[in-house]
Image (cartoon, rainbow, N blue to C red; front, side, top):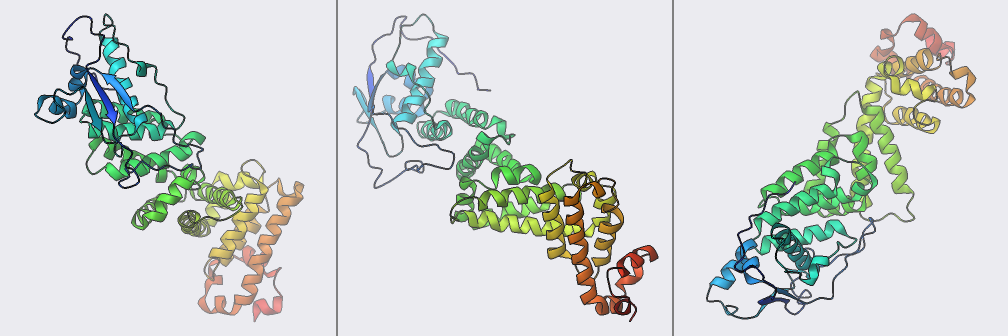
Length: 408
């Protein structure tokens, strides 16, 4: 939703001839590049497209109406006063961004004054394919030219370009990190961009189950975090802080999917490093949560039970979950509980005898626990960790361990 622009009545009723030409000066970007002057093709498939145009016939009174920069320029004793050509710095303003700004101004003006016959050629301007980058360039141009209303309009368009910063679709997957990288750079001086930065950060970290496979495999986010270690630490802590008993399994699946996605690339790139680091930290945290609440997941929480029944997630993920939990989190204090959950709850599901694959997965997990307990039995008895299990559990456990070893 954009702000209404004010439209005072024109000086004359039929204004057709421009009285000033805006022109970009020499290309000096090799000495003083703007933040957006150099763009490489990204993983989103977007690449900057520049117009060949270098000058734009305009009307002074319209420029003054929208821009404090031009208002001060035309009303001062500057060198450009009275001149028919105004040169603008190409290193700050790109031709495409300037043309986009003029397009907004004139289209809006003509809509408000349909009787006028102003029709500059740039009102036929069409958005380039790299829409988000173009809007960012236009925002910086509007800020430089002192156009707060246009700037607010463009901030709203930036939000629209990523579905109001509330979406996990493939298009937003790379656009949201790209937008976040841009807005946080200027958030300290622009209230609107500060708000967009907050919303983007919430989307990138607030729902680990959805955010991880969507955003934490993107080159744009990886590059940003690689260049900003403090930001990487902040975002990782926020993401980990959102983990809990009710999203641990779903988040582990998200990590599993994200790691498969990163591993599928031919070569590991430097931007992978911060993403993998965060994924490993999240992974270890959620396997800890699952191990600490294993009985809950095996008897009450539907996600793991539906995996056993072949309803939710794949059997490959079920195998991955059990193996990772046992490898990362099994210790003297929880080995018996893990065994109890596998044998007394998961293996007794009605669907298990009818699926050889699930039976094999559960048997492999059971064997891992038995092997661990057999090796650590003396220490577990010394610590008294076996005393908290009931007789049926101990009897089932004894079947997998030499009875002499078990009673000694």
